[in-house]
Amino acid sequence: MKHRKTAGCGVILACWLAGFAYPPAGSFDGQTFKGRIALGSDGDYKDDDRLDTARQATVAEAIQTKVFETVEWEFNNPSWQGNPYDVPARAVFSGDNGDSIETGLFYGGGETWKLRFTPTSPGRWRFATTSNDPQLDGLTGQVRAAAHPGRDGFIASAGSKWIRTGTRRAFSPQYVMYTSPELFANQPGRIEADIAEFIEGHGFNGFTIGVACRWFDIDKTRSDEIASDDPNPDPRTFEAIELLLGKLTGAGAVLHIWAWGDEQRHMTPMRWGLNGKVDRRLQRYIAARLGPLPGWSMCYGFDLQEWVQQKDLRRWHEYMQQQMGWRHLLGARALELEQIYDGLDYSSYQKHRPDYATYLKAIRQYPDKPTFLEDRFRVRQGVYPDKDYTFEMTRRGLWHSTMAGGAANIWGNLLNPRADGVSHPYPNKQQIKTWSLFWRDRFDVALTVDDKTEDGCCLRIPPQRTGRRTEPGTGLDTMAASPLAIYYKQDAATLTVDLRAMQDPLRAVAVDTKKAYAEIPLTGLKADSAQMLKMPYQSDWAVAVTSGAAGGR
Image (cartoon, rainbow, N blue to C red; front, side, top):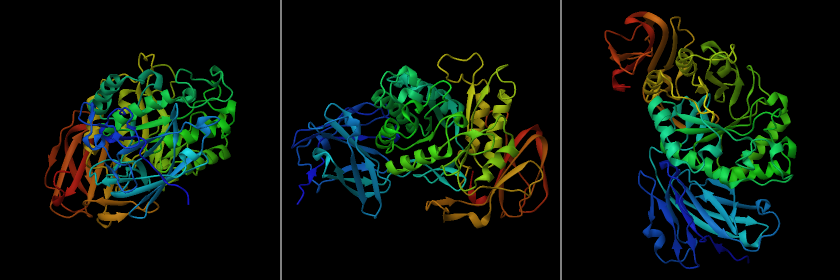
């Protein structure tokens, strides 16, 4: 009978969803757990009495955590041979509810290997490892996860909507351009200030970053700058990404990663072979180290038509999802409204200056997955006249993409561009915040475009889509509270609405999308057709109508 070793070689409880930096490693001396747990809004750590107590780390005793919080184990392996990044080791976690999650261990430096796990449901989870390395084979342990209501969880999809698995709530991802890992590494204060500006102040809900060959050396962008013909992943790059991701998810935001760039500037893994030995090593490391962490998605790169074929994307996607125990949405940008490979998790397009009709067409091409118009919509002057944006185009683009069903975008104010590539603050940030506040409690997974609307555009939750339902293709349960109609019309002083599908009494508010957020009550509406609303003045208006039971939504 194989001897089953206990997984007590150091435990860290990381409150990723609280936005804390990763705590220092715990330790295990054979009898005693010692560790640190992140506590408090300032991200400081204090000794956890649970971990200071002398005890046997046996299969019978479970580590306590919460759903969507990440736990990490460290294992000592002094007998490893060869390249430590190539040592194969996997763990299978089995939940009391019958769910199973398989993930990899990753090299943590020195004689240390690490294992991360994020429970997706409450209850007890047991794990066992398998490896060709005797020191990493046959390790066992368990975690007991308490329910964690309100935690966002992973980015996932429900039909064409982007959602979070914890809250089951849909969102329309609107990212702001951020910088590369070497410039925010070990800079928690900078990250917090940028989150305060762009997430809390503007109302964007995520950052986007590019990595390229910094995967192998945090200070190198291009493959021809890296000396080794057989490079390993650079842990410094991953530490920087983890710091940023923890801060973002703690603020309720998300991270989108551009894995590679273009081959013209050697910002790809082509030197070592796409999906070859070096590339696969990196993919396994990403899957084991970042895979358990909620709140991120990934694009393969840009200008892909120049250096990638369908088979390359298919192999990358299949291998990454096979290696990751938690599904993350992976995509690849293509020109116009085409796709290089349509088997990815979201549809990605490089389309300049999309209008409402273009967003709608893009979403409807692949209605079973979310859509991302993944050009960077940058406010500039005289750089690319056919694609540069203005502040007014930015404001309207936020509304067009959301009213079409929730397509994702990347935004940046690059007037007088910064050396680090980060967007400047927007002078019209109160308008962006108005978009954010309007949709905060209204963008629902059940919202559908009403094609019969002739005045402006309209999203509805019809009565037949209210209540709890299981989304096709995902198995995720979602909840739509009540019938809802949302209208948007530009340069309007009047708006004709059709509310026959609603139930009296109705509550309606109008919001001027050009101003700071303020709700103007609308009275006299009935559950009837062809009613004309007279707005206070001409502007770009958003109107939300709910049945009286829906309260203030």
